[in-house]
Image (cartoon, rainbow, N blue to C red; front, side, top):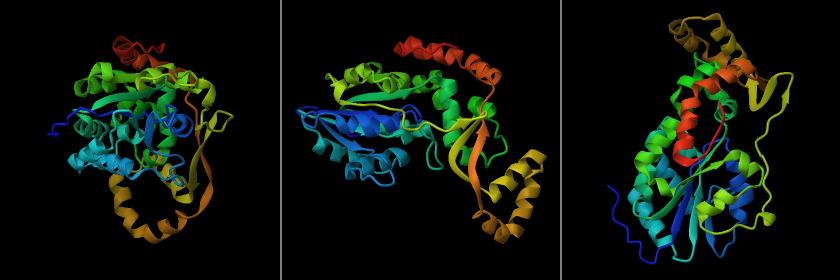
Length: 309
């Protein structure tokens, strides 16, 4: 159980939890670092991840939320860092991404333990769900492609990792953990258009929109019905896809694979170009939107954010 925190003379902590593919990189690169330093302290994540250095408190916070370890120690560090005249901001879309260590539900539970008792605001960025699901599928394709149920629509509707874009499930779980009046849902489409009014409401002060330029930093090359991914395909990927398409039994694959460890290690290094996957058809997207209609209505009823289905 989280230890009691005195709110006297303490400032506010704002946690932006994503969702992934909802202009999170835009906020982390273009918006949060540009906020007035006399009002806020941005702890991270800093972009690009591979070259930027976030603060030590961000790393401690993220590790605790992702694993559930060391929460009380990090809470004490947050308490020392909070100042009555400043707002601490942490942004991390991985808080809603399932890993081998924790599911998205477990991570949000750890986050609740982390910020319980503090003066907090929670920012959730969302996007039209069918488009968000496909963008996330593209981002996570190397992992999804290793599995036998690898169709986009099947994963979008049935995989736990995709449930974060089933907004009824997501908001229902958030409301079981956090105060509704402290949850701010902001649309990807507004952020990309430069409308930061909802963000200003979450932060509690007006923003100089003229001094902040937003853009979509994760657009992909699209041509002839195909989407080019960041992922480099290898000969091993080609063979895996062929095996999946032939319907070879998993028990046979697992029996043969150890005998081919050396050849597989060699072909895994042979690059064959950027991975390209077909865009969903109009009928597939329409079916997906119809399936998610009730989820969208729940989002609208709870937070006034509307997506047509």
